[in-house]
Length: 311
Image 1 (cartoon, one colour):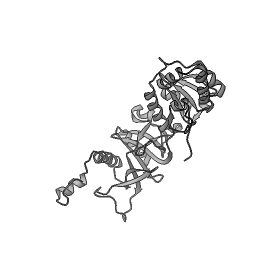
Image 2 (tube, helix red, strand yellow):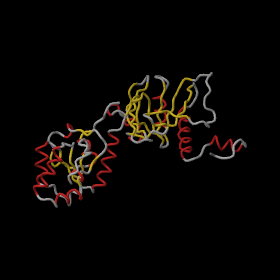
Image 3 (spheres, helix red, strand yellow):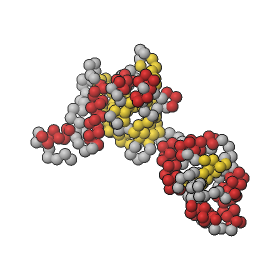
Image 4 (cartoon, helix red, strand yellow):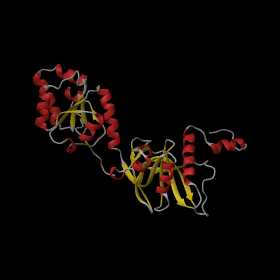
């Protein structure tokens, strides 16, 4: 995992920004950190703790402050800002706020992209931060299959040839959705959430031994696929081992660590004659119930008089 970057081109597309000036192609300018900044204090003359890697967002407060300065002072403060060469300066509320002429001039002089948005400053910052968090999230790629079953994102792991793709096709036939086959890109979008998606070049293709490559969206329709899904459960398929003790009651919770996030996990043994699609559908429903506070195994213990509460 290295440092990730997102191009201004992608941000402009995702957050609907308008370009006033750019020194070069937007896909050649990148942003590397998810934090953004309102340069009010900097413009007021406080220059410590200024991070020039951040996008600089200017709203009503900054523009009104600048409007109250003498032209010389305003130019000097703006010059100091553009001289820092942040990835871009973004002006909000473009219906009521016009950029000062010297802003364009200084953007050209220092080679800084100048963008504008219709949104209010707070809305704009919220949208930008959520896009940046997703685009710059730490990520890993896992060999497996990601499907959405009854709204639960399930990552299916297991050795090559164990039947992950066949299981995915069976689930798709039963009305569930494929997110990724073979390579699954996993991103940590918050301290508790992992998002999974397929690498763009192989998205929605699946490889079935004996048949070859199948485009799931074409064969089963666009309702059979999904671009990304939050990860709720990890299912590890393994060849049935008669000597191994498998989970029988579901009382103990097991977890699988992905980028420091613990995802509920279960091992499902594979043997001829087991209908894995039904097992996986049941695992998905059971996982949902647990999240809603119901645990069947605990209720059974209560009924048998072995436990007093559902805690």
